[in-house]
Amino acid sequence: MPTITAPAPWDLPIGTTPPLDMLGTYYGVPMADIGEDGDVIALGHVGTHRMVAALRRHAREFYGERYPFAFSTLADVTDAMSHIWVVNTGPSDADWHLSSADPSTPGAFPVTRWTS
Image (cartoon, rainbow, N blue to C red; front, side, top):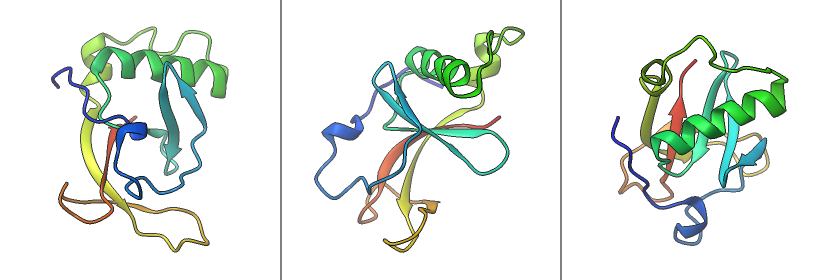
């Protein structure tokens, strides 16, 4: 996965990013867990090294893991990352539900997904 940084959430056009309940912001990267398998999303297309740093800090601060990814290589962690575009398909008065989308889809916004 190349190390690129696409628009950060705070640089997106108004109305692009729905109000999502993020669990924390680490090194400027808003993050949240998704699903029940330990997957994580970060708002924006985050660069590789910043995403790894944010994932480690999220694991330490949110889950109390002292040495996250201690037995993993950088490639192990980055191979599980992908830059995708999503839309919130949930009703505005309920939990959010993200679905993959083309960047041209109205309301689509970029996320970096890490699959555990």
